[in-house]
Amino acid sequence: MKQYFAFYCGEGRWDDRLIRAATRSQFSHVELIRPGQHMELALTLNPPSATCLSASGRDGGVREKNIVFNPDKWVIKEVLNWASPHAYQDAYSHIGAPYDWAGIVFNFVLPIRRQNKRAWFCSELCGWALGLGWTGTLSPGDLALRVEEMNRAYLDGGEQ
Image (cartoon, rainbow, N blue to C red; front, side, top):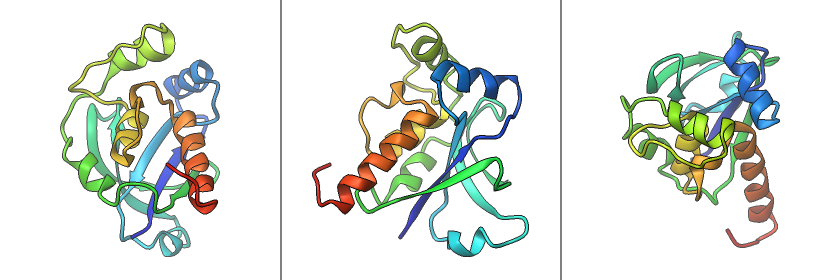
């Protein structure tokens, strides 16, 4: 079953601008889209929307919700078959966990590399669900690049 991520690149609020500046990325947030929603069809709806899962400071932690994707503010990326087919279910097991504010501050504002092991930020949770390593250091932009790299390696027949 195909897996997709939605990366937020809209202007957003002050915290979106701060995240983009601190991580030098066009993205400030990432959502894991629930598989089986036929994204090709969902993106043709007006407005396009899907059920997503992520960690959100605005929503208080790990949660699932319906997101409306304004194409000017979101970039959808497919994850090829190199990733865990259970990514959504694995991330879902953390519903209700708090947002990892300490991880954001200590990994991206102060380069100390510390985080709360029971809390998550968006790219940390999504990267972990894919089976990537060192996810506490992944910004949304880093995760987007890593997905692109892994997709290319998969298509080239390379190793994970």
